[in-house]
Length: 580
Image 1: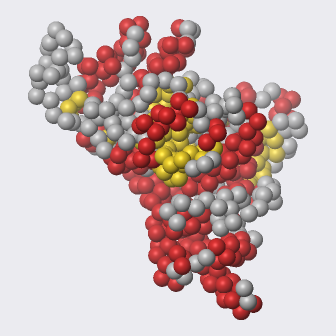
Image 2: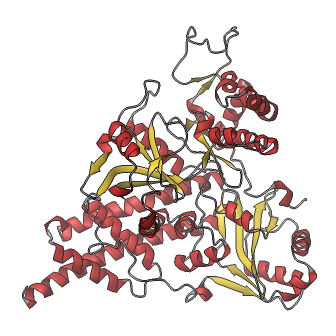
Image 3: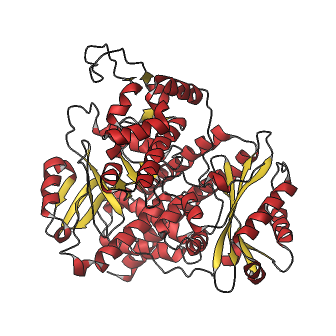
């Protein structure tokens, strides 16, 4: 290639790269604006607006992507470019990222542009950022994301300094009481020697807003250990600010950042540094989980894919024993679900045809998953991540799984010499299906707890204005901490979309075929026969949550959701809440 031709190529590539980074910056400003406004929504108790903001912020990315791709086609005609252009474009874009405070998110945006142009048919590190452009050294911008508080004086003085730094327009209901409660809670957690050894308290500058709560997130630093230090704040019934809890247990912080909760609104210009700090507090959390919890779900998907590639490479030596296989449990009527035993997620592929009992379409299923993405998941619905043209090493695919995929999902499957490519799938956190848990568990206390959790899960989802639909226990999972999460979404809908009816008296509880039953009719009295199987489990569930098997409960809940009543589900145990 002549020097003139190379110069011309670089000029076009530079223009292409500049347009993309401009599109990303515009998108990030939009994202930041919505996140920053969370403070005002919290102070003014604008809970309905907060839920609308969740939907708007999620929609930003695709809208920004569409806008920039249209602009690129008008200026550059990307489909007419050869491989040299794409290599040059990536090089030029990398130069623009040198001092960019959100460089990692900008890489993902670039990948999305390339994916949109080529309909995700090309995953090539020479033309996109399959691997990151550089390794981020955490700590280099730490001073830009944290406040440090002096602990040489009293505990109370330190707490006062925190609230002097984080200012809210809404006054505290009783700050002196809050300070006393926090003082007692911290002294109950640390003995006198530990308190004396605390040399710093570090708090992230962004406040984390979600639902009806705001969290100040940080850590207590001692010579040999650090502890989470989280101030959970809510509004009183009188519309004033109060400290609801002081949390210093790592597992409480983990639940706050759970995969079953909506994304936080947290305003920061340095997301990589915030995520690095959070991972120091929660070392068992993956980077991609923390990015997603901050609302950067697209970049979370990128980080997940990199993590996946690394895991496949690291476990290649054990490939004969560690193969992708059908997930344990009852096979789904709508999804084929499989997993890799050594990896903590499941892969879900929509089947080509559904059982006759499922009067739904493929597009309807996709729409249900989008609904959950933009709904307040209240800690009871698993987050899902949608991928296209996801690649698996063919040698790692169990033959039974391959045969089943070709039988049930053939339209989504492509086989190459070395890979299995699935054109569309969802990824979810791996959990123990509730039906398997109840088969395996023998501890009566754990069984009772998980059935209590099941009832709470159903109720809380309903109060979030979602009717779960298919409530068979196989559609619920149990986390490592014993929490029950719903994960099957093909029949969910808003509460207003169902008619809850009493079941006419009949000797046969299953005999409803003689009734005039509409497509939206639901008979809660039948739930006891379908949610769990064994009589002993039914009896426990009826004892703990028998109201979910009555039409009155569902009509009352439907009434509340119709009135726009938004519930507040605290993600930490009730016993840690301060008494007022």
